[in-house]
Image: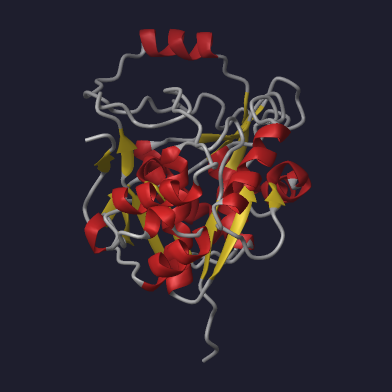
Length: 307
């Protein structure tokens, strides 16, 4: 049997600069895959052409380079791969997809006249009004929805344990291409992970609700499924807010790369050395890779920053 090289990835969306939360994900995915002797790929998820900016993509690459987080191979930009996503939607996913003309106003009116009991925090599922409508895919008012399987499915998460989900009930028929022609994350991320042969998928736990759906998309597209999946706890500040672009998290300052790496490794519960704050990034990362351990992260959904 051929031995497969472990392949991990970091896939930031360039809607802003890197902040401590996204940096921590980058450090964890880098150290983890390198501890296995694998490759660390970099994918810029700039599929949202309205919010993503080239200057933020350049800033992310520059910050990673200054921190010694050097990627393997060429950087992939999703904005250059639209034809690939369309081809998979037209071919492998066509039988599971349909055009939808429903507006938000129409859906609100339908829900008002057809109330469905909703438990707290339960998702609002699209009622499939257009499932058999035979709309033209090329119609300018159409969005494209993908039918997800109505079956409880589990995957083993190397950090969070066994995760069960029924995507038809948790997500419903998701929009994979919007009316403006933009593809959605749930589709393009799955296709790219499969095409890049990602074997070890490590990312934030906020993406976990999409995982079963994305595994299904990869399988239907006959692409390579990840062998191992890990969802990292998120970083929260002292006010209990997740560090994110939406919460205006402060961009990292790479003028002191050693302190940033030390901070990220400390948050991740990794072994550190007292000399780290004054060491070179390569020395810090070499130490972190050699001593990488998922154990301090097991079962954790958030990490406290500033306490």
